[in-house]
Image 1 (cartoon, rainbow, N blue to C red):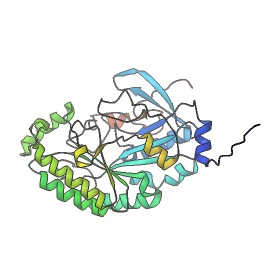
Image 2: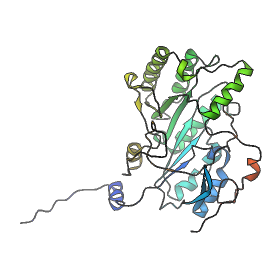
Image 3: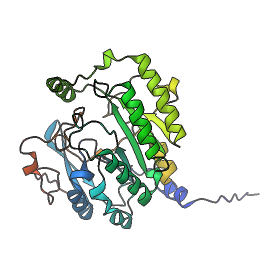
Image 4: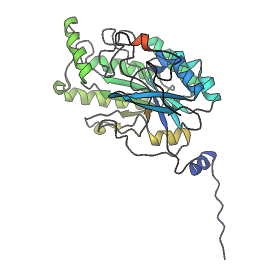
Amino acid sequence: MSLLLCVKLSPSDIYSFFRIGVKTIIISASRRTDIPAFYTQWFLNRIRKGYCTVFNPFNRRQVSRVSLLPQDVDVIVFWTKNPRPLMEHIVELDARGFKYYFQYTVNGYPPQLEPNIPQLNTSIETFSELASMIGAEKVIWRYDPILISNISDYDYHLKRFAQIAASLKGKTKRVVISLVDEYRKATYKFKKLKGQTINVIPSNELNYFKIGELMKAFSELARDNGMEIYSCAETVDLEPYNILPGKCVDDQYIRRVFGLAITNIKDKSQRPECGCIPSKDIGIYDTCFYDCAYCYAGTIKSGQKRRHDIDSPSLIDRYETSP
């Protein structure tokens, strides 16, 4: 006697079933620079060509060819402080069948720390418009990093976070926070800020009682405004304040939002505290024009702008590989 079991599968379940054994490709665009803000036309050209090339930031002789064909790319993760240049092209991404979400940083720092970022009210307006276009679940708010200084103390962050959270209520489902890390490039910038009488408090000198109070308040404010709150690559345990360690490239989030069952293996190329799953970053360090005081990715180097070509397969110079 045989038994026939009928199970109703959703389209996403069927997609995931037939993708078993298929290599996951997630495009990160980009942790290394702000592609939506400064390199939208290059990105669109590469999407239309179906590939780009990326050199190893530690060895330019190692060049990778990255497929940007819709059938090869599971998800694109955009990292930005201004998606406005890309927004008018969202319809093309949709028409080509891409899945994507945005990690959108809105800090509202003083210009001494974020000299070239759009004004806070402009960022909030753009965030709201983007959420209306693609859905609040696909736009993640980053309040990141939390830099404690004489012009951005604990009370400053409490008021600023509360202001932004209230403004973004209903426009996002998740907020990501982290304390500032003292990368080599950032530490150099912090020393230069002292000449402007701006003193950044090093991580080993933070008042962790005040940090705890701040995190508790952030957690309550996030939930009051309908947001999950997670930390990003944080060495400090924030779980006592109901802030769980997060993944910016998150398999569970991707399954929930897009219905894709993908790997949960940690990206070994990221630092130990980072929980992200693997992705392919198509950006290049030292090509961002924002010049934020805390940035680990560097800012535009002398001559880098001239080396960018919107028709090149690579973001700067012309790195080509065989198909």
